[in-house]
Image (cartoon, rainbow, N blue to C red; front, side, top):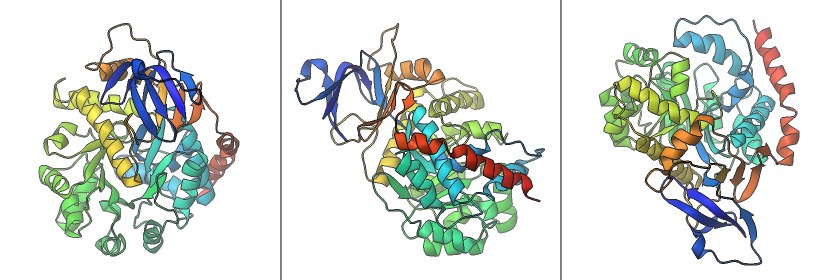
Length: 433
């Protein structure tokens, strides 16, 4: 058993100014220092008044995209489809299971350094579809110890039979470290025949799908099928409880009502949307429709703190008001991500209470204004998030990052092999005709 003492403690719910956390794989108890009972069998870690917070969840990622960093391709897109054609579909077409594995290793390494210990991923790998989720999970979860919720993005540009097989039988077990959803790319790359096949094979898995990332996706559905994307998916009974509707930039009010009614979640990726010039998600409107929202990075970076900042600031800009969304709304999104990921993994995440997983961060922070239960998240959002780097990172009560350095020896060994497989991917992409 271990104890962190003399800490500022905040779990996005309650704040303890001078407290302790008793933990093993799970949190055993947490309270103010006056309640701490010394025990010679405890391993004591003195936080020296550093801040202890739960580690983060990334609500939507493309782990494979980490090897695109620095890759220069001919790129002159005039719309969103051309961004896919000229960049991402060229890259993911060439990914095999070895590259999937090492992308998991590389991404896991970076996620840990940024305090992210749970990732909901949306995978694509055209060169190897069957076995790709297992390969990715081996790198991200088995080696890097990051909890993962996985799927393969079914798309008509691939073998639909293989996509459905990989989502239906991904070769990994559901447990507290890994779980699966049924992945779909987007409406514009999914025929009605494909949607029928997905419905037939999805079982009780919720979908994880890009929806209305740009107006092109919505217009494609209306022109081809006479229905909005969400109406189309709903007509095939695909919108189960806990489905992840990702992006949602071009959704209309009727679609938002359906999403709310079906118990689905919206996962926004504001930074990626700005980068692709497709628009800004109207988070205020989603919340008005009583839709639970949380945040992903769309594979663009490994730092969730910057994502939450961009959600708030762009919402202010979009609504022309600094009041329409506040940091309390952002805090709710963070808690939504813990609730969702924990439920899918069958564990409790995000609180310092008995029975919750001991996944947390130590972050040096010396406030020079009063820090208390009413303003703790304000200190974190404005004081820490702009340059966020945790000193220590724990998963299951074991330290994974110590003094800003990854300490997992197997991860360090495998990480040093990643460049070879990044080079392999680059060569394959550049040689494609």
